[in-house]
Image (cartoon, rainbow, N blue to C red):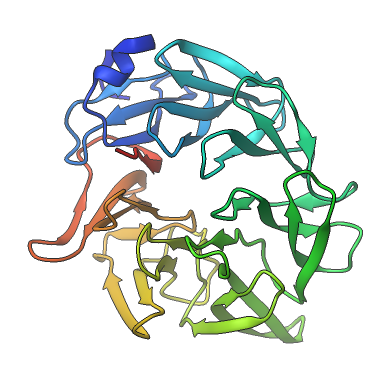
Length: 334
């Protein structure tokens, strides 16, 4: 990681930080780094950590959750104006509730939630299941996740945050894990889906991003020409963005270019932003800016992870967010 300043406690929130990203250390490991959208103002937010990942801002931009450690032995921590502290001793993939009161996370394949003070931990997803990163409903009363466990195949699960009612709402033969995304509307959940047909020696793949109601009823199916990455909703309107691989190889391979896709469900309009020839897309979910006028996401540029910014509207375009080798951008709410 290039040389940069350190920030702890209150100094962190005096800094003009647009993005939190994960940057590798020269001797191994990684830190969470803050920076402006143009790549300036780089500051090390976790100078005492070794291996960090999954940075996530709370809805107010005053708390930053992240996971530290090598999987599966990871600790969830929270950084804010009071300092850096442990939230739970074991967990990963933190996701803040829309009201900022609780954090959903994964431990041993189960979705759990915990209060900001570390109390009131609750298991949400079924026991003996292996689930992906969860997504909150806009009312902070329900969670959705994709699980593989006591059920045959993968299933989209929607449950109350207290774990009292968890229902399988969608089940299909899919090739890969997906991470659902709950829209700012209460009645829409998006997920990338790849259905497989044919024999083991001659497979046919049907790629799409699907929008369903919380009961599993399909609202829209956005067909894609290649593997679709995890989707993300804009903070306003009904725009949905995701990356798409340019070929039949899995999206997480770094030898495919691909594109960023923005689909407006209200207008049924499709915008494709192709990547330059030397830039490969990754499957991680894009991060919308708080104003909904730009998207940050991870790409591979000359063999190194970089943060790419696509700005929309007048004067928009595609650019790298500075020269820092980094990934997993999290846009700070203002």
